Image 1: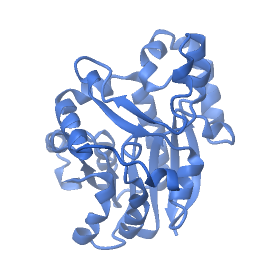
Image 2: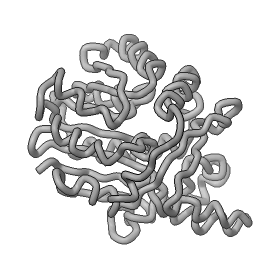
Image 3: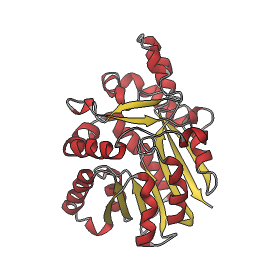
Image 4: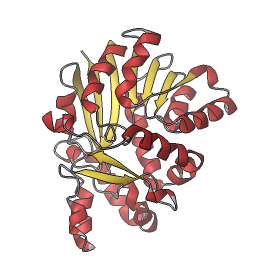
Length: 285
């Protein structure tokens, strides 16, 4: 995985990420939570979580944001240690957990993805039944090569790690962008570090975070030493990605047939490798 290790962003990268998401935190739910595609992706990801996690288990989250998935799991009876690089995002989660009476099921810690192993000094090695990470937190982690061993160190043998990440190949983008005469966007992911806006609305759409995209095979190799693969699922294969949610909202009925097709093929090769995002279910050996 030489390519992954060589990404070294310039400047105070992690401080930039933290400050950007601190600024977005007060409006994060309105910007992201109202996105129809984002809501659909949460639903798909939660089905994957529900298949492998059980009430009463202790799990960790990388990149919790304002806690949509952590709160959902807490409502199912799990205990979650939710981590994020943004202290302001974590504070939003704490407020919501308190308002729902879920504070006893949710703990929060401020840390980047490559620091997740620090939980071991507090909770102990092999202490978590599993963990998860939804959306782009792993894509924005330049030290991603350090992450799998740290996850393995805090996860029980037989425990699971469920993650979604932005895929290197998006079938919808490859087909869509040439049709609207923007062919360079169709192949922008191929091995490049791409600046991603943290929001689609003013003024936060001017805040960008460098990200690198990975194929399912690359991510599986990265986790290969300590984990076996149980499931690979594509998200937004035939449907627009979240940055094109306005198109989906405008023509939602027209996408109904493609949504059925995606439900049928999203876990089957080779279609499961063509999504805008990929979901992996990994089990610790």
